[in-house]
Amino acid sequence: MEKIKETFNFYDQTYLKSYNLDKAIQYQLNLLDSLDVYTRKHSENVATIVCNLCKKLHLSKGFTEYCVICAYLHDIGKLFIPAEILQKPGSLTNEEYEIIKQHTTLGYQLCIKDTKLRPYYAGAYYHHEALDGTGYPQGLVKKDIPFEAQIIRVADEYDALVHKRQYKTHIGISEALKIIIENTKPSPNAPKNTGYTKAGKNNKRIVKKLIAVVIDDIEYEISSTINYVKYLDDELKRYKKISDYIEKMNNTKNNNDKIYYEQYLNLLLREDESIDNYSNLYNEFIDAYNLRKNMLSNLYKEIKIIKKLKV
Image (cartoon, helix red, strand yellow):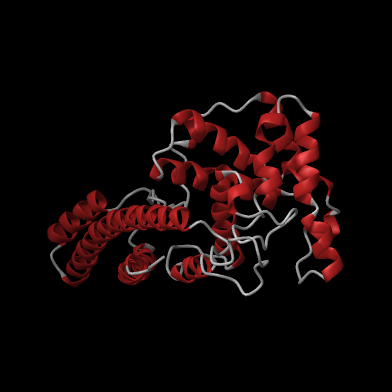
């Protein structure tokens, strides 16, 4: 029997595919791939989130394409960070964290030296700057931080939280959004006399659009899960018929009836299914059905929480 495999990705690639990245940029991304697969995947995720944020922000196609490429390149400076620090499984020391922070400046320097990458240096250089001046490498405030970098910062923070907590579905993801919302509030560490002590780290407008993007994602996941549950329900009905006819076949003493039931069962059974193994498959489908029904219930609860979040 050929089962339908249920797959779900947080990040819809539909819009991203419309952009043809320069070969020079693809080459740099391939370098990331050979050094650190996580960083490459993270860069792709952030680019896709940025693309969806730009769409929600109603930005032009040209500026959206520019932002997406900046997002792809935002962590390019990690090429120069020692692997033992970049891939360290535990917490970083203060010294190691200072080295990691250098990826912004290193990425900027790489982009500036390459004429094809130079237009997109803003993503690499500014994506860790915060509106209230608490970011790095320069401690800039809102008026000095390019809007594309403000978008990338929010997308970068979201993807980092999602993968740090190893979410397999949107269940529980409201907690990640709450952290990002909290970073729109004033920080006691904000530098004085800048005029931005009440700004928070993240741009509120962008965070609101992130919530809208996540809601779209959850609605898509709910729709996909509903379709999968319908498929499982149809399969369970078929297995119930198989079970009923096997019982009838085993209980009848009439040989003609037994042949009839066996022939009918052959119509119900699919490739790789048999009277001997159907019971195990039946139980697997029951477990999958119950799991997805529970997941749906939790997704409905999660989207209800997220729709009530205030920025």
